[in-house]
Image (cartoon, rainbow, N blue to C red; front, side, top):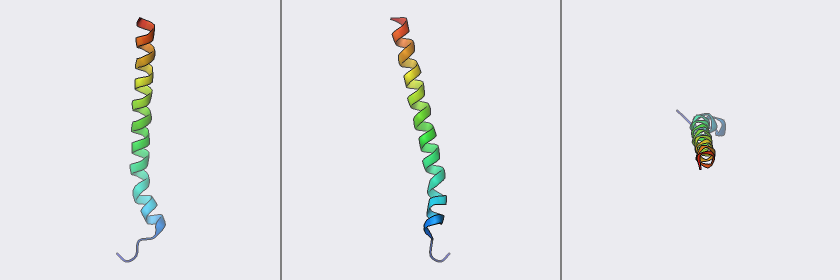
Length: 42
């Protein structure tokens, strides 16, 4: 394997960060929409 460069570490971590951010924003967006629907119902 040898020494792992900084770019290789970024390539390994980047997909994890992207998946986390997408999941976070989808979850936040769904919660936001649900909150609006709850306000409209009341």
